[in-house]
Image 1 (tube, rainbow, N blue to C red):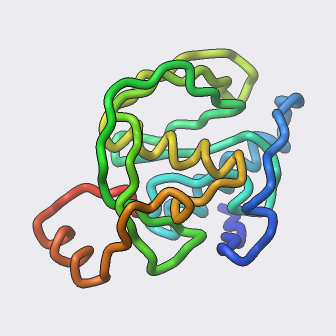
Image 2 (image 1 turned 90 degrees about the vertical axis):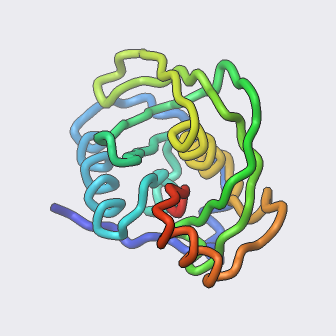
Length: 166
């Protein structure tokens, strides 16, 4: 298990556009494994490569249904919209309401370069969009409609609400 340092909002790498992954090799596999370990250790539900200082188009997500790895993800379709609370491991202790698509279809590759499509809705769609934004240098705070207090977050947690608090 190798943990990587999570970059925070003041790090300029988070504002840069990530490069397409072209080499599907052991280094990519190690990056994805490290990202998953780092995400789980930080109690997140998603992590993008720029958040660990790597400008590659790779993300990992686990909303509690098992890890999903997306390499070179592209959103092909969106449907509906929903506003919900998000947070981010790179912007600690800040939460806000963000509008995202309710459903998305994403084209991506796995760690071996095999192309696949993922249909996601609800929290998974939100997490996918949030992580893909990271690949384009966009942070959730750029899209916040309303910032949410820590007290409100605690109330939602006590009710058992699922939120993208990454």
